[in-house]
Length: 158
View 1 (tube, rainbow, N blue to C red):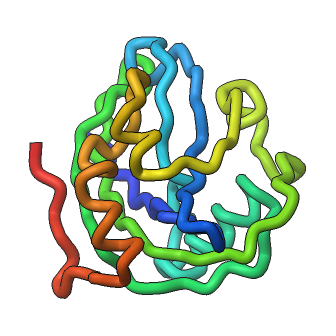
View 2: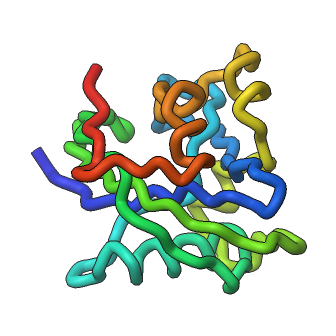
């Protein structure tokens, strides 16, 4: 099974909301809509920090991010089309002053699959009927917003 090193960014704005990306990709999540944090596959040899900065810029256009620590990890097996892929996800805290979001850095796949970018409060995440990944986000995000970072990083377990 192919492994995919991935960086996920818990991008927090000045008002304490987190940016989530809405996906509709027939190859993922059985073709159902879902929301996830900013981020994606790390390039070969790319550090977690460099990947977080690149992915954030590509998906948002924001360059002012202040990176914090790695706080969570996850190793889900996700089906992409007909292939099962072992993701090696690392969640990194990042803060931004905000500003206009841009899709100019989207890849062709992202242009086809990303249908929205939106800032969310914890209460909005908790009250949503939509699928949001990771599933622990509403429960674990309050500690991140309060700068109570786990050391070592917490592992997401299903």
